[in-house]
Amino acid sequence: MDFELNEDQVAFQDLARDFAARELAPNAARWDAECIFPVDTLRMAGELGFCGVYSPEDVGGLGLSRLDATIIFEALAAGCTSTTAYITIHNMATWMVTTFGQKALREDWGPQLTSGQKLSSYCLTEPGAGSDAGSLKTRAEKDGDGYRLTGSKAFISGAGDTDLLVVMARTGEAGAGGVTAFAVPGDTDGISYGRKEEKMGWNSQPTRAITFDGTYVPAANRLGEEGEGFKIAMKGLDGGRLNVATCSVGTAQAALETARSYAMERRQFGKHLAEFQAIQFKLADMATELIAARQMVRLGAARLDAGHPEATTFCAMAKRLATDLGFRICNEALQIHGGYGYIREYPLERHVRDTRVHQILEGTNEIMRLIIARRLLADGAEQQIR
Image (cartoon, rainbow, N blue to C red; front, side):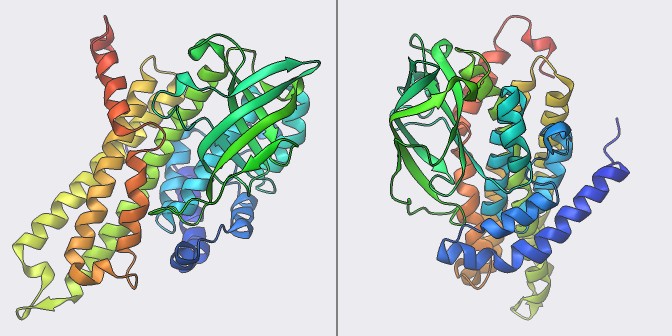
């Protein structure tokens, strides 16, 4: 069991760290305050391969493992949580298009998405179907050589500013088995976008509702076969859960480093904060929890790469643990800064706001516990979950 990174992983980590320090960190506060979606910076990330990290090489992706992806995304998240989180969503949607899309669709959209020249959104959640995603109502009715989409999606990252929508719609009976996946150009007739949501965090990426009113989609834009959409969506979310978990880890690492530096510089009662045992214990717990979260994420990624029968369970574990601990570490870092942590001159309040949503999206942490518990209590699972 080797916990060390190989030469290629270190090289990608260094590349991502350099990009984060040069392009993300200096702009993160302004993007947050002014709600700027940094499309040009995203395209720069695409030039480095970061928009198609685990998409196939034949369409311009890097073809890396999910473990490699966690290393890259962690390094990027230290620069800007919100922007990196969008990059991970784009990677998830791009992987779905390039893995399950038909030949012409892959050849047309694949290189544009993996290069970052075109951006994508993942459209599963609906106003009445959040945690209960299998109950989605958006319909896709057959119409000649294609389908007509009718319905609405909610809380879609990038919506209104992205070029391709990966949409889950119902083509059959109620339940997960009646869902089909489609790749829909964002400017197709019959698509309208709601107002940009005003959010607590994740302000460098827009979030909007989407309405489909008889939107025509060619059959060639279907991903997989009819009825396979929910399975495709869940396969995407296994990686998506690792992605948001690793964004929490990267942000927590940045918060810990900021808190450590502050504790060694700030003086109260004639001593540096770092000389007080209460602060030492707090930093020690933060560091320990950060390492635990990182290793859980990497274990989940290794299980997913290996096709482990309980990979979904391990991804859920990683998402639950890392997002809970990541938020706690950021909050503790803010606490160490006292009143300074609460003002925007320091990045801590932004770290807290940005990581809070990680406990909600890609399946709430309560749903993660449900996934884990169901598998843990299933016959024979005790031999696989260990």
